Length: 100
Image (cartoon, rainbow, N blue to C red; front, top):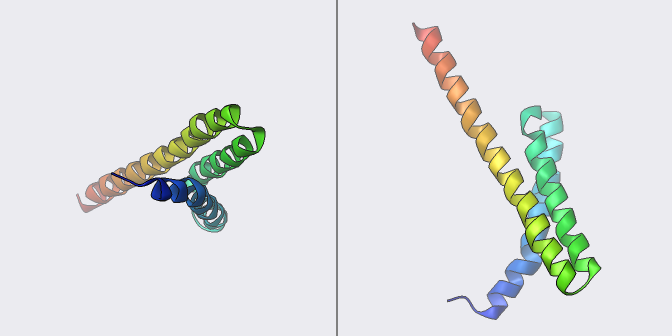
């Protein structure tokens, strides 16, 4: 079982890590692979909503942070995962057709 100190550190440092990854990902997407841009934008918006929820107040802020912010972060991660799997499938299909 996790102690409350570990959970507190995840609540504090988790969004900071997501924010840094989203900013680096947006810069990388703009410079190299534009197809991943929407996933990183969802991550950035999710982290922003999380911090906005912490600014709002006690119970309303927790609901905003966890449900809206966390949902946007999960949506961004799922978008990135879907795009990664889809591009891998397209690449393998394209290489199989070129070999024939």
